Amino acid sequence: MSSNIYASGCSSGLLPRSAPPQARTDERRQNGVIKKDSGSQEDLTFQDLTSIEKERRELLLRSELPFWRILSYYRGTSLRAVVTDSLVWTTLIIYVWIRWRANTIDYVPAAVAMMEKTNVNILGGFLSFFLVLFVNQTNDRFLEMYGFS
Image 1 (cartoon, rainbow, N blue to C red):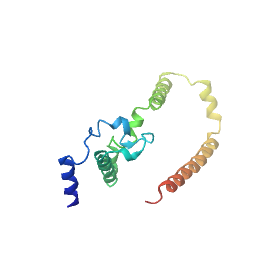
Image 2 (tube, one colour):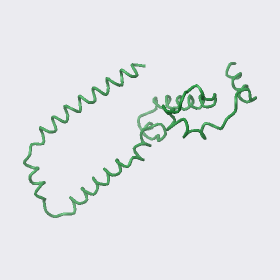
Image 3 (cartoon, rainbow, N blue to C red):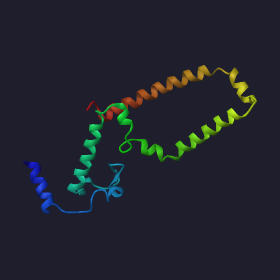
Image 4 (cartoon, one colour):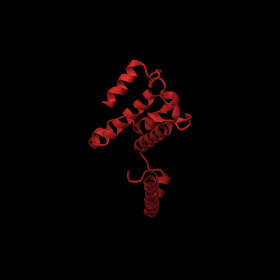
């Protein structure tokens, strides 16, 4: 019953009308999240809040989907940031160029021959140790920030 009251209030013009939330996406939200520097959140309209809540609930329902379906989403994921990041593409292009160059030459460079004699296992062990510490700290910060909610 209360949902009908709100719906009838919105349609009859009791709440202030404004532009649709999609038109204000750049002003207040970035990728569906309210920007921190957008000022006070008290000035959001009812339509803004309902659209944000709708997006939040859609994202929450996605967490119950199978893993392969979750990976197929573009909106609400970090894929958008990865696709538009120039550092990712620069690194990928450099890697592809190095692999192409290594496969097109007929000789083994002197630097590669010297690297065969070095002990990379020790470096890999230290890297693994620091990686475990970093992941542990990151997990602790996440749990401290969000708890087990």
